[in-house]
Image (cartoon, rainbow, N blue to C red; front, side):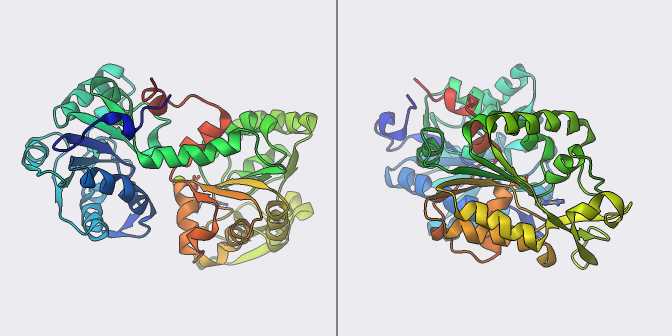
Length: 402
Ligand code: ADP
Ligand code: MG
C-alpha cells in the first residue's frame, strides 16, 4: 500500500521536502509551457494550508552535474509565486548555505524552492553510495519527504529513491491522481484499447513495445521512432531519425504482434523535408515510393502525411481506451504539426478514456491550442507512465510502499 499524505499526521510547523517535477521547457529564460508547474500546485497548496514549511526541489533538464545558468530553476520560482499568490524563497544552491538558510528561516505555511537537483552529479549517479551521500545532505533540510514528481518515479535518483528511505516519506496528491488513472488502463481497460506511440526517444520507446503487445488491441506508431520500424520492414528512410541497432528487435516485435493478433497501424505517407528546419521544403511521400527514390539520400521524415493522419485519427476515435505518448512529428514547426494535431483532436473528442502522457506530448496539446479539460487525463510522466503501463516496478513508488 502506498503511504499517502493522509498517513503523515500533523504537518503544522514541520519542515517538508516536496519533490516535484518542475522540469518545464524554458527558452531564453521564458517558460514556454508551465503544465508541470500547474500540476504541482494542488499538493503545494495543501501543505501550505496544513501549516507546513514547504521546501520544494526538482530537476530541470540535463545539466550533468554542472551549475549551468540555462538550467536554473529561478524562472520557475517566479511562476510558482504567481500561481500560488505568495512569496517563494529561491535558494541559489541545492544543499549549500543558501538552501540551509532558506529551510531554517521558513515560516509555517512558507514556501522555498531549491536550485536544480541535477547541479549535483550525485543526484543521478549510477553509484548508490554517491546518491546516498547526496540524499543525506537533502535529508538535513527537512523532517519528512513528500514525493510528488511522478515524471521521475521510474528512476533511482537520490531525491526520489534514497531520500525516501532516510526520512519518513509519503506520496503526494499528484502521484495519487496519476496512479488512479493509469490503474484504469492496466486493470481491465474498456476495449478496443489502443496505444499510440511517437516522439524522439526511440530506443526508450521501442523497448516498451514488447511489454505492451500482450495488453493492447492496437498499436499506432508515428513520430521519430517510426523510421526504425519502417527500416525493419525494408524501407530506406534517408536521413530520418533511425536506430539501426534496434532493427532486429523491432522485427521480433512485429512478428510477436502478428502472433498475438495486435493490429499495428503504421503511416502510409510521410512528410519528407529537405532539412531539419521550420521552413524546410517538403513533399508528401506515399509509402510504396519510399524505398526507391523519394526520401533520397538526404530526405528527413518530419511528420506523418495527411492520409496517415486520417487513419491514425480513425484508429483513436474507434477505441474506448487510448494512451498516447510521443508527438507524431516535429510539431514545434507549424508545417510538421499536422499529424500530432490530428491525433490530439481525435483524442480530445474520444467517447472513452483518452490519456496523454509525456512532457512534449502534453506541451504539444497545449501549444496547438487544445482545451486540456477535453482530455481524460494529461499525465506529467512520459517514461514513468509507459513503464507503469508495462507493469514494471517503479523504484520511486516502491519505496513509498508499506
Ligand atoms: P514525450 O516527451 O511526449 O515523451 P519525446 O520526448 O519522446 O516525447 O519526443 C518529443 C520530440 O519528438 C519532439 O520534440 C518532436 O519534435 C520529436 N519528433 C517527433 N517526430 C519526429 C521526427 N519525425 N523526427 C525527429 N523528431 C521528431
Ligand atoms: Mg520529451
